[in-house]
Length: 400
Image (tube, rainbow, N blue to C red; front, side):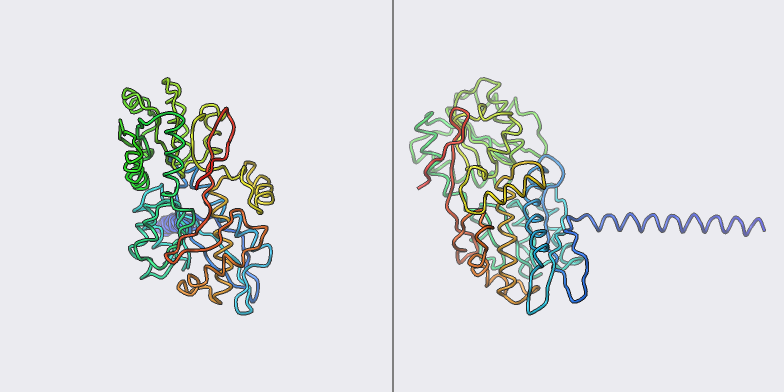
């Protein structure tokens, strides 16, 4: 009897361990930002993928890009979903954390395809886009690329949509404003990501051709560095008139704040990835950012869909939305309209061929940004909306 009791006890422990491990595996696989779409008879589901930084220094940025995608999907679902060939489909957002690392983004994309068959995968960094472009055409999924890097749609990849305007359009207005207001000496302190390197490689020759001088050229690895005093001190020894900074909004704001604490009185050129309104949450006011030029905050824009979007976003997330949320929100709506026009939920080539229909069919009250067309390479063409901070206020700057 004692032997049987011992055997039963051992078996009980083994079964408990098996169920525990199963539960752990299950929780790993459901690390998603699902949109609560419950199955209804005759109704289908379209899984939409997302890979971005949801932990680490860029988590603030990643969460807000995901917020825009999720909010749009929830609204679409509440309005009845996406109807294709007489059948209704709900959108389900499946999100994975890539910690802002390209290799993690690539691995996440493979997992999303294998486990969820996602015809579209959003990502908010150019390194992640590059990693996915290695195989997305073979695996047949569209990349929703939230990056203004022109290269992502210039390399011949037929299944990539660049969501923001390309950043090289900002070079002239940013340079002209900064030189006129502050002078021609600039120090480079952008993010060390590939996106930051590409931005710097475009800005340097443009600045020099305009008669300027780059007196310090370095970068900051926001994934590793949290205290920037040493590198900023080294840059300020060269007496720059302007600092070129950028990356995710939160650490970029810390760079600006520490530069002011070290006595810097000049201007800032702020890469389009960082947003003034998000930076203000760190600096406490716009006064620290006086003399900065960058992208106009979404809440200060006058696009037709702004009032309703801002109201709904505030109600849901208890904060003002930035362009990360706004552009990904509108992109999700455009993809939904393209799916309808294509008459397919799982053929990315058909969906891609109807992206212009997606833009044309976008309801007026969803136009958080005015995007008239998509170019032949897959980039959304939108007007550049530029602003500067002067006397603690956001001031629009013409970007011809």
